[in-house]
Structures are given as structure tokens and as C-alpha cells.
Amino acid sequence: MQTFSCRCGNPLFFENTHCLACQSEVGWCPVCTHIVALEPLPKGGYRCTHPSCGSALMKCQNYVLSNVCNRMVVMNDGYADTLCDCCRYNAMIPDLTINGNRERWAALEAAKRRLFYTLDLLALPHGTHGDNIRVPLSFSFMADALPDQGLWRSTASQEKVYTGHTNGHITINVKEADDVERERLRVDMNESHRTLIGHFRHEIGHYYWDLLVKERDEQACRQVFGDHTSPTYAEALEQYYHHGAPNDWSMRFISAYATMHPWEDFAETFAFYLDMVAVLDTALHMGLSRAEHDGSLDDMLRAFHQVGMAVNELNREMGLLDLAPRAIAPAVRDKLAYIHTLIENANA
Ligand SMILES: [Zn+2]
Ligand SMILES: [Zn+2]
Ligand SMILES: [Zn+2]
Ligand SMILES: [Zn+2]
Image 1 (cartoon, rainbow, N blue to C red):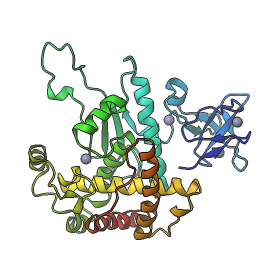
Image 2 (image 1 turned 45 degrees about the horizontal axis):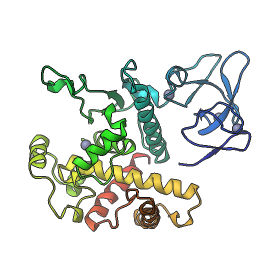
Image 3 (image 1 turned 60 degrees about the vertical axis):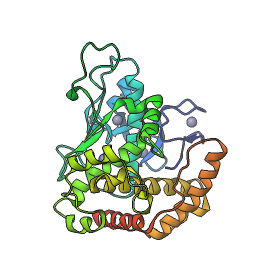
């Protein structure tokens, strides 16, 4: 991610809705792809103040009504779409009559916008229902139907919301936006990280398996990640929750969870690839000269290692979690190479 600049010269950040220096309202202009100060127009709407843009814009409805978005839509002859290029992917949003759900939803949308920023940086194809795409992508942000406390009957399985992906539809349980709940789950599951952006990067990995690998490149993918048909996903899940990951998982996998099934291995490796691209992009914009790379996978891995080790030490200085693994096993590097080529070919 980069930082942006207000017309007053103050820096603006990707999540901003106001400039703290000049109080201008700000938003993401989809035409010049910057966070910009917004100049209100006399007949309604706004003008992008980026010197080379000046597009007529409206706020996304989720910006106006719920303040969970900071994106603009293009206005043509006074008309504009109601939802921005990120919010238009939503199939279901949380129940906003429940206390705290607006804040949870805002945190989910902020992570989703970062996801799309990285997908667009990589020129990865995506589209939703009504777009010309083989697998339409959509998101539902849902809460468990009943709170856990004070129940007079057990919670039936359909009332639990599982974070996951099915045929282009990504569901995320809104409790992942609660810091306490998410950290508890991270410790329970023995994960090195558990973040909202991480969930989006993992689930979009499943989406790209469906879009780019399924019935297209399955044979080659099987050579790298193993056979996804045997054992079946259900058998693998059962096995993993009974026995966990093998002790030597880091020799062959990017995470313990990746050992569960080839599909989870693919999604975890895909998520790591997106982590790396996003961190390198940010490091370059922030002037960390060590992040320079020529775009080849091994060069990216080297740059990510250098930045990662520096940030790990900074984090340890502040008592925070490590950013990057100390080493990437050769078998994991080969999986990343498959994903690197898959992404290159997807936008060729
Ligand atoms: Zn300003
Ligand atoms: Zn603009
Ligand atoms: Zn929006
Ligand atoms: Zn998964």
C-alpha cells in the first residue's frame, strides 16, 4: 500500500474519510485510483481534486449510510451506481440492529478493500454476478444466529456461521472482527497469525483455485500440491482435527493448517504469496530500499526475507508477533513458483 496526498499537502491513508489538517472529506477515486480530497459540487456529488483527474463522483451508499466504506463511484449525467467496486460484491451484510456489528462490518470492509487493492496490483481477474466471469465472486458477512450464552437448547449446526468459500461465495463470521475472539481462536489453533486480511487472502485463494485451476490446470496443480480427490476433503478434515499436523510440517508446508488437504495447502500458499506482494509493495512505497526486486519469484523471496527479518526484530522490540517466517523450505518455494506462474498467466 502507498500513502496519498491531500490537496493541502497533508498525507492521506488508505482508510481515511477526512483530512485531519484541512478537514476536507476524502475518498477513493476509482478513475485515478487514489485517496483524494473531495470538492462538493453545487448540484450534488463531488469532484476529485487530484490534479490530473477531476472526475465527477458520488459516495458509495455504504459510505453515506453506514460509514463502512470510503470509496466513490463515477457520476455520469447526474447518475451513478449505488455501490462502489468493492461493496458491489456483497451478498449479505451483518444485522446492523445488533450492537457492535457496524464496527465489525467496517473492519471487514477495510480488509476487503486492501484485498482488492492487491488483486488489482497483480491484475488478477475478478467479477461478480452479472459480470462476464466464469465464477462470480461474492461475500457474506454473518454472525452466528444465536449468542452462546443463556441458551435453553443447543445451537443447531445451521445456526453456526463457518468462515469459508463455496463456488465463488466467501462467508466470514463477523466475530473474526472482535480482537479478543480472534486472538483466542489464534491461540486455540496454534496459528502464527490470525487477521481479517489473512482470512480474505486465504479464502480468495480458494476462489482462484475454482477460477484458474479447476478444469483448466488441475493436472499440473496436483503434481505440486498433491491429489485433492484422495483423501476426500471430509476425510482429510476429520483426520486433521483428530491428529493435527505432522511435526515436520514446516519442511513441506507454509503453515500447519496447509497440511490438512491440498485445497487448504493451495489457499494457505496463495495467501502467503499475497502477503508477500502486499508487504513488498508497501516497503517499496515507504522507501525501504532493500525491498527492491525484479519481479522474479526468487528475487521477491529474497527481498521479502530481508524486509521480514528487519520487521520481525522491530516487532519483537515492541512485543508483537513476527511478520515473516525465518525460512521458506524448498518444497514451499516450489508451490509458490506454481502460484507465481498461475498469476502471471492469468493476466497475460
Ligand atoms: Zn487536507
Ligand atoms: Zn480521481
Ligand atoms: Zn463501498
Ligand atoms: Zn480454507
